[in-house]
Length: 95
Image (cartoon, rainbow, N blue to C red):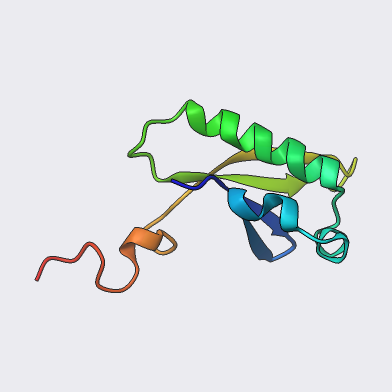
């Protein structure tokens, strides 16, 4: 399974996959409002957070910027039935 990090920017979410981590351009980092060092640190923290949850947990690591100090933090974002990828479309429905 590929590790991911969701980066919250205002009301948008950008998903960064492990395989594309080093392909993020300087322009994309500016749009995210973060440095490459911030991105790599947040990704590493996200991997650490996910080690503490079981494989069936419906959550993902989410990076968000604290408005008062500008520091990037990482936490767990829990899926609900409305935003869970496994609950979209016909996936998971009994026929």
